[in-house]
Image (cartoon, rainbow, N blue to C red; front, side, top):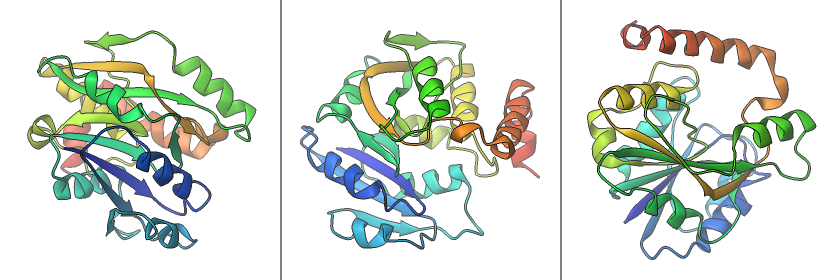
Length: 229
């Protein structure tokens, strides 16, 4: 079985299309877990139309890593796919493309390509097209990883869960720590999703400041100390 964990907060514009695309995946044994962070739009109404489990996390308790850990703790699969609620798989082979990239026990995680939607801003289109290329690659030192469209091994997560104290890029922190243990990360460009706002959120400077602070902690090896605060 593969478990799919989806984080949502006010995703009514996309979550219906996201879940419909997951329903069409050609993988035979799948469960879907939605972890919602106090959505105030029609997100939950749309989620309830589909066969999935719904968990909730309060705005007060939310961090990206805590939300993911909550969903993964409830999951039954040996492989865990992670998808943002505003990401839509492009084709019915999305899940399979992520899964088959686990070519050996040394692969801890796989992340896929992200393409913009037609109404995505030009800033985000540019960033998605320049970040996610067409060549498959194995990463042994580069800890770029992106949980908007990714899959990890449950046994690796059990030994190394996501930080619950970082405000962003918990995915890169996790990837750096597993690479330091001797694992590898795979980029699989055939596992494609549409991502509305891209990875830089239209040039949001406040978000950029938060991301930069966390990356500085990661680069300096200080995230363990940050988690203890």
